[in-house]
Image 1: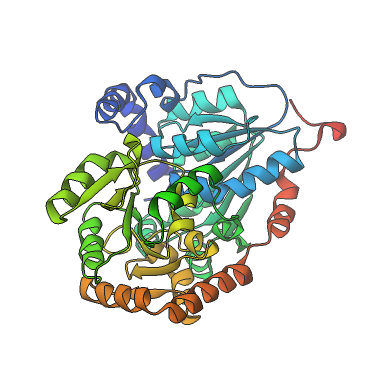
Image 2: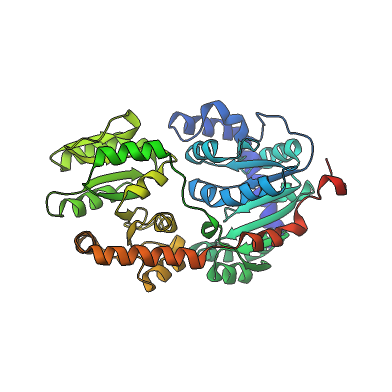
Length: 431
């Protein structure tokens, strides 16, 4: 089946689904998956006016993409203050993070669902001069509507996993047609570049936005308060954990000899706070405290549940050892190990890390990270690292050195973007 027929069929089917979309979004809102006050944005109906002048739209799907996109957003804001920056995402957690971290002049909206009606309503209102997708999630109606509106299109830090490439290969003509809409594609790594090229993309180079990031920010007063509460106990952090991983981390921590360090569990989705508290209280003799409830850490607190957003910079700074969530069970693919590495925390991770396979492999090779394959190996690694300070310091130093070597070149990325950025006002920028 040709690309024209396949994409036309997709457009027709998603168009027919439009009447059901609001009902579906309302159902998700009841389950906490959508913001009930901003459902119209998901249908392409804006909640804000479009300012005059040139506008760059940056789309980041979720929390990880939003974090990795912040250095680019900040560079656009500082180097081209004439541009209006519109930043969209698809999840409430990402929206909460962006509300804290975006430049004040930037506009945030939820991304439209990929129906022809929603995509076209969004483009008609916002009229972006440049549309930038971060990492992936290629939605045909939105991409074609953006191109039809006259915008330039860029796909930056593009990630194409082996599984995604196999899926797109079944519709190779459609993939080629879709990827050909982009004026600039920079892949996150060599494997992604090869897979994108095989699908017909003109991926002209590499740019891993995650390596551009600065150390995560933190509230100095909050850090001092937590450090005072913890005292000299030391901290093991379970970072960005998912359901099923916390039990594994608690078991490894409980295997440490007493007096144990404080265990901080920072779930990827803070709404899991109550269920985490119940689980820990079932498994641990001692006390828990939840940050979202304003509870403080006492000498009797065994586990501190950090069920808040945007505070990982605090917890990485406190942690002597970080166990990376998203890596201990199949299907998630791991989270960014550069964040704790930049802040001097020793890193242990499971081996389910396909989202960051090259970074993890490189960090293991340089001695900056311990990779484990099962709960027993996690217990052994945590015991060895916790009780061997010389080894721990060497690992932390190797991880920091790796970050320094791999730091992305923002100027090089900027040079790639220059030809498709809107023309500055003095040269006749379009309104």
